[in-house]
Length: 405
Image (cartoon, rainbow, N blue to C red; front, top):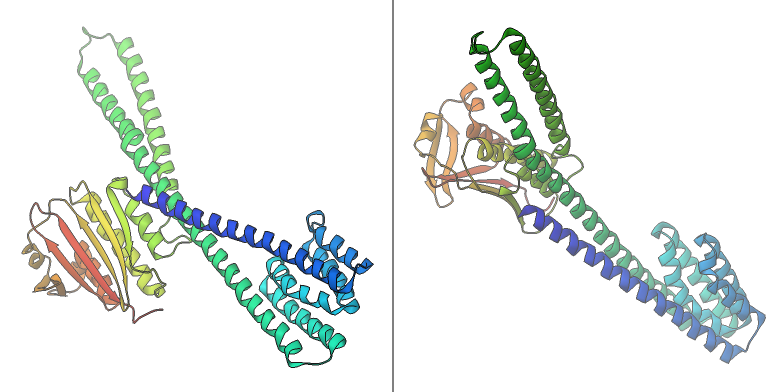
């Protein structure tokens, strides 16, 4: 069911973020180990000095300095002092590249990496003279560090965005499910109570004075009217709660999330499922808006008119078009009735395709499927329809997108 699938997608996204977090933590430990090894090499080659101690203290104080920019400034300052003393300390820059890329955003970290590269080139030249290797080596190291650091950051940001999107979709679907449950239980129960009280009030009014004295009749009438008022007020409040739990489909959502909300927002709840095939991508605002409205109309038909117990909405992304399929197991209808709606049809391998309206105008707008067809044609699409009495109904809407948006 759609709620379980949404939960599964959210858990999968959460696992991806957790995996990237574990990789990031492991890289951090490896980075600290690399800095330690390079510092030991510096001590072995150039000997112990107060600069080594200063760098070690500055680097190890990272957990104690809450301002990361202050910590980086201390580390880089002591590193400059260290490589001024000896050539070996210059090679610490390759580890420090990743430290800087991990602390700052790209707009700060990338320029800072290039500044550090320039300092490293100068440090090597100062100790051994200007060489091709002394210039190209730090530059290549900086480019590799930038590619790896920014690539991993982009992966992590994308994974977090997918997790947040899955969480929002799952939250909206759960709210819609709760709204459906409230509608099917509390709201229906209050409506039944109200109708029952109205029936009892009518029966009491038919009793004659010998059966029920006027004082008792009046007292019972007041109590029944009070119960009716209470039930009606609670019913209205319940409906307000249901409306509040069902947000607007396009509110902060992309197309798959919006259609998932549409599919789960009816009184049928999870009986109407939603799936996505293909790789989701952005489409034009006009196509997105029309697809959501088309989905709302077709899903509403299932919930209100099809007498169905199950429905399925599928959004398929293809290279040059997007396809919306809506099927149900309801009563269906005779395809000949399409002509009575002022629509012409013809058979094709895709199914019975609605191609035109015999009488355009008011009749077209007043018909549910004709209204859907009008929206489809407005964005240059086609609509295929399959139905038979007692066999349910299937509608496939195909809208060209001209490749990736």
